[in-house]
Image (cartoon, rainbow, N blue to C red; front, side, top):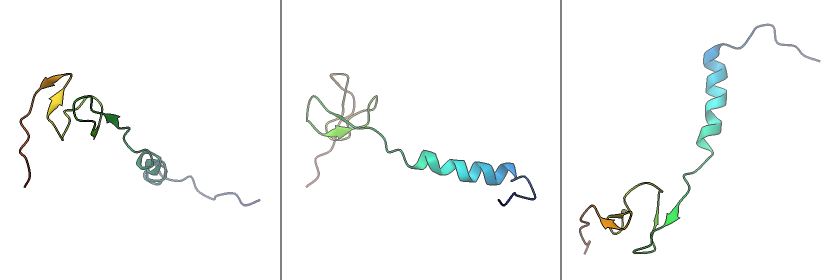
Length: 62
């Protein structure tokens, strides 16, 4: 069986392991006000509500 002659550098090890974090996508929740998907613990980009309160005013596109 082949055995490496040298130990991989920290940089190469970390580059190899860094790809695992790219594979997980952010989990989405459904907004109770407008039923649009949004990232938890963030303001809903569609309606501007957070925890049942209007936090941001959202402009209507059109």
